[in-house]
Image (cartoon, rainbow, N blue to C red; front, side, top):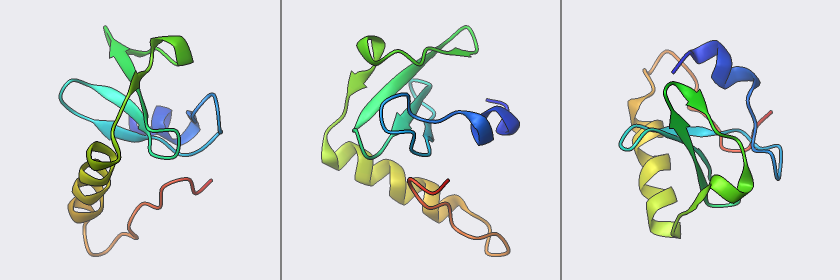
Length: 81
């Protein structure tokens, strides 16, 4: 997933920042708890195509993203614009 694309894409419902789920590849809105699929490298940003996620799934994803950030970079904040 192109990092520059991630900088401009937001959740179509709440306009919040998206996280990347690697397996299966999707863009996740932690606020709405929805995973938008990525098909053939193209994010499908339609609410009706999104997969609902549990709070536990979102928490695990946030933990993985936060722990993967190098110490020299600030940790990504969910929903920050």
